[in-house]
Image (cartoon, rainbow, N blue to C red; front, side, top):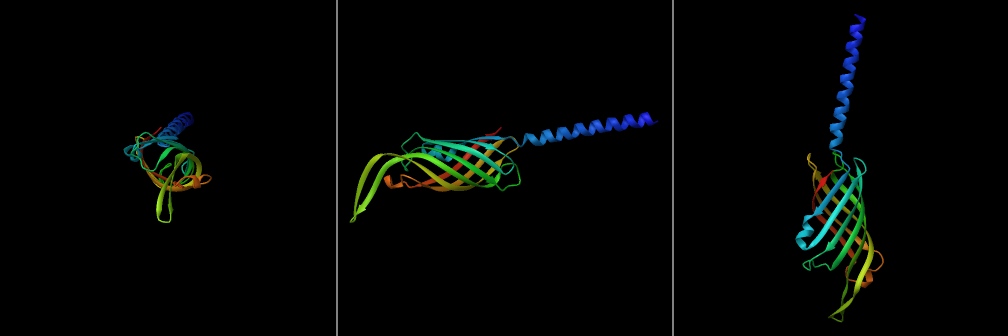
Length: 182
């Protein structure tokens, strides 16, 4: 009788341990670490902006965004931007929901300046200006169970070194992005 009871308890404990491992595996499938996104808002304006984001844990991530102008429809005279960022999430799900982001941008803009002297507007067109800027953004990210990512973002930063050589002394970040989490 003791052997039978011991065998039943042993088998029950094996099934229980196996069930715990399967539920942990299912849980971890939704906590994937990498997001790749494309800004569809900028694509309509003649720019390409792609983002890679590495989720560090449930509440934070690091990433980098690259933007390149391929059409002259875009009116802010930007040439390219590279922006690393750190995000802090406030949602209940893994690396999603409302977030605040700190970013730095290395970017190139046209060196155009419009000067108003005694009511006269003159145009001073200098060489392209490369500058570094720092800023803050906020937004929201939604992730489906299949891994599709939707994101909305707005933010602003200021140029640090060459703001006097161009009219573009403020960096605007805005995005409506679609991507995939893997």
